Image (cartoon, rainbow, N blue to C red; front, side):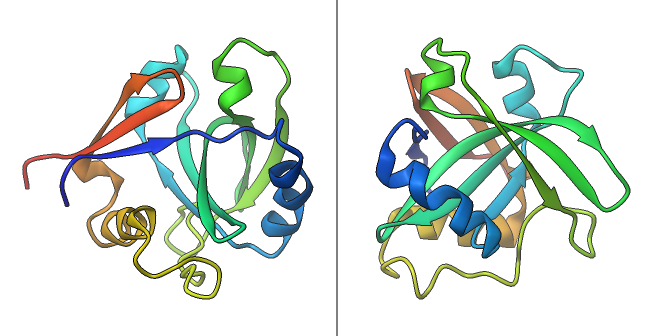
Length: 152
């Protein structure tokens, strides 16, 4: 995988806001832990994650910050494009840990909801194969971030 740019979406857009809870309830997502995000979000005491969800044939990305960790789930705060630009409005969600104690829903593969040639889909597949630990996550500008493969 080469360096890729992903864009953080906004729940301020009605087409995303209206579908977010439905997609979440259907467990249609990929979620990856990233220590790089904690540094970016300015709170290294709470773990951070990258969430990918399908809406209208595209993959939308959100940042998540841990609020409370339970035995089988984690309560999280969604950091979307609006929050990044200074708006304090956030939503809270709960994701369940899988059998590997990760938040990723590995049973969901996006194939029915996203074109298989989508570059974001390739990012998700590559991260699932190699883990997020093999990538450097960094701010590109505003709501754009780069995912760069680390040395393997």
